[in-house]
Image 1: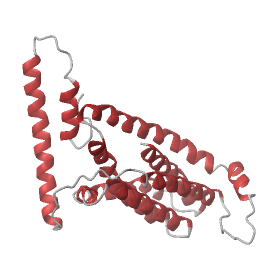
Image 2 (image 1 turned 180 degrees about the vertical axis):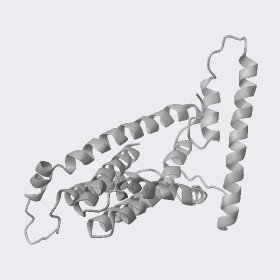
Image 3 (image 1 turned 90 degrees about the horizontal axis):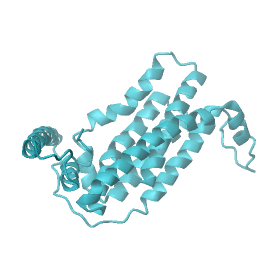
Image 4 (image 1 turned 45 degrees about the vertical axis):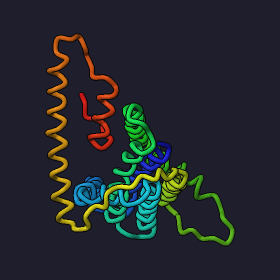
Length: 255
């Protein structure tokens, strides 16, 4: 959970830093809203594949690798690649990271604790979005940036001279913290069925599985509501919710 918090914190702080970098480069205004589009593009393009990747190796290792990809994206932004392309690389890492952060919960925890764990993950994510936005704004502040730039490292020229570059450097350190925490996640020994390596089969299989999940959730909810109507029960028991979380891949789908 700590790794998820720091990784999401850096994602959102980086958005503010990337916007500042675009302004520094005098980029056209229409590029600013495209940052978020380039970030989430991988979530759409890679939707059928990231789950199979997350199940192909230990989840801690997957999260370490994907946070490393985010660090590479920051480095690309820091050393001259266009912010849109660099932020897209970070989005690629985030898209591959997402299934692992939920999948690890079902491996480490019993079903009755999944609802609480999912709540913590979602709560920390919301908190990191808010704090990350604030952090990004603080780091690009010229006064704050100047305090970092005044630190002189003998015999080393970092080529970091502006507020956006200072912010990106600090955000890389946060990603590094998240990656190091990922290394502490224990291997659970859980092995999954080897997914097909055919991209067309993966798309067809995952779309069909999503369709079954939606139909299954509707069916089970309606059946449960029919059974408890008139009984005075106002909410399903924790075991039902836990099963629903496990069935839906770690996300709470109830109202």
